Length: 79
Image 1 (spheres, one colour):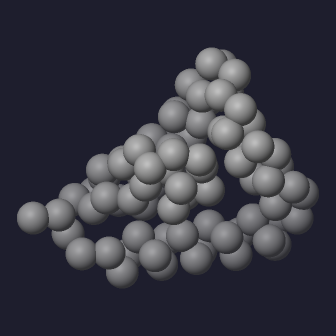
Image 2 (cartoon, helix red, strand yellow):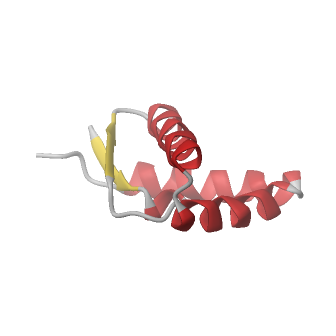
């Protein structure tokens, strides 16, 4: 199991996610983002705006995801 923060995944908080795979981690981050969006959290709305700009280019988004996957893979397993 590995740990990444909301900020590491493009969000606004230091909240940590724990997962065995990057796909699980991304799903947790997505769920968290939707919860923060629904709550109207301003910091997350700003972060989501940045992600929306990134998603306008499928190439840029793919590169961002690939880099985050590599970052996840390089993390040590939690003790």
